[in-house]
Image (cartoon, rainbow, N blue to C red; front, side):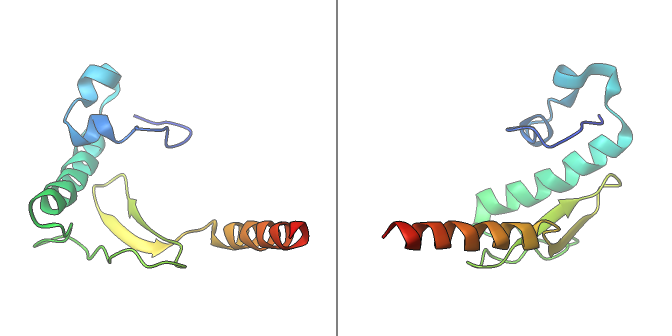
Length: 104
């Protein structure tokens, strides 16, 4: 279903195959494709501690200081890419660091 944003815990209905219970007839085949891909990553992570597996694009481990995201597209594909908000986030970090330094 189309939503204006990614609500807190919005992925849970995809993860636990409960989309119809939450969204009813608004669920599409594209939603099911996204859920299938997301579920594969999650099951791999639960089993092995690594979300990656055969046929899935690589999802690199977290790295401090990197603002990268795994984007799940409406066609069920996943792509790892830089966060489009990275510049804004870094600006906020610098502002908070400057404010913290001034308070010391």
